[in-house]
Image (cartoon, rainbow, N blue to C red; front, top):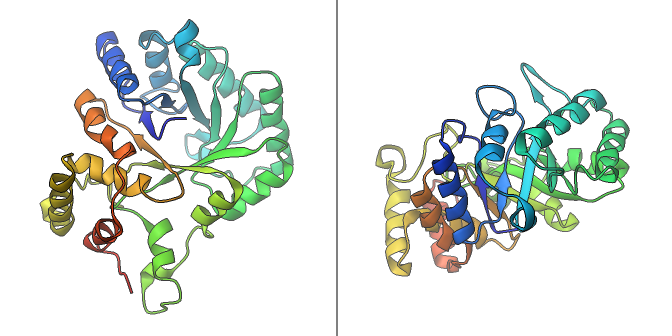
Length: 296
């Protein structure tokens, strides 16, 4: 799977040419993983359907890419029931115009799900050839361990919100044992380290936004110091600030993937160099501090 992932949650309104241009740009810069969910779009499967209609990923071209989708969010509640998961996967396959998805993620934890039942459902989809690998999204370390105990196939990914504007899964560890700092509170059970120990790839969603959903790039009202640092580091490496934000994630030794959810080919090209750019320790930690996190 490629270090960058093209997030497809906003493609519903694009015409065929725009979808193809986005996909072709992604492939040109080495992005071979495409991220979907059954709930993306104005109606269920709308973005998957737009992708299936327009992307043109058939035959040998289909085998060169990784298509992943998610299941489990319904209107007002979460649902990992056998009936819903099976039905939604079948609908996703039809919308995407493919006979399998490479990775199926459980979108958000369903507190009423029995891990044994969920594991049996997922294993059945793998055995049937409809799904090739299983992952999760927004799951804590404990939730992963609970599912993992029942699942005969390995969990390959956990998609979590992560970026310079929202980095508690990294920042908490930097402030470990500093009781006076709110940053030191572990809210996810050490999920990053837990994923690394299990060989689970963390996929960083919304990498350019802060906790309030604002894009940090160019936002000097709320993130002036961070943008100053980004611009200086970008100039030093001959790349854009978008690439530097991306590189802040890919420089981390966890070998995380970065989900770039843009409908603009130029943003994809701006981010792409960040897949291979390695920031120095002073640069990486400077960005941590500029983002407002303590380095005790």
